Length: 177
Image 1 (cartoon, rainbow, N blue to C red):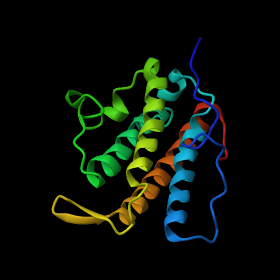
Image 2: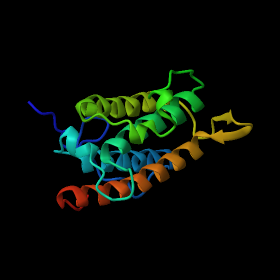
Image 3: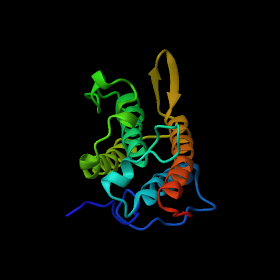
């Protein structure tokens, strides 16, 4: 049986909820991040590993599977390594280069890569559950707040969700959210 990406659900296992229009800063940032996380997963729904690995917008090397792998790495780096200060092994083979998340694709590992992203999202949320948006860490001599990390991650997901829109439409004509 061929694996296909599951129905688009948010990282918490339920259909994507509407983001609040009036709420506290923490809730709005968390909901926007969850919405963009889900948008990427939604673009992958129903596709096989082979389809996810296809590069459909030449000359770019982008694929939906590459975006899944990249965002798993970004989740890990920003939340668990930088914010929480954990030392974790590299997610991808360092010998394959810094772009291994985009270029070292194996369609037969798509299910594992997809599950890794969902797990990194869960672990990221776990790490920040009791933290304040004002909590800080130092990276390369600069002080960062958890608030900035949220804004950065929303921006990163928004950019890549746009890429995912183009990739999916080029792949099979599916458009929309």
